[in-house]
Length: 102
Image (cartoon, rainbow, N blue to C red):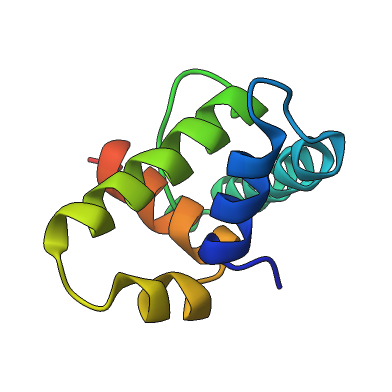
């Protein structure tokens, strides 16, 4: 599991260059979530989130960076939260909040 904390550290270390390993991981997360939504919809079940545009790596990175910034504003023990929060769950939660199905 790639934690939010590990993503943050790798993201910071890569600077302006984006890590190809993280990009590949995030692309796989995006593909998996899109496939899951398609399977759910085709079987008549509610989708996890509803967006008109395909998921991509820049969106995944933006969602993760927004969540890290949000946690920083909370002022709580954010390091522990980031360490135990998996990237996939954080992305899914952010997608559900940002693109709810109505």
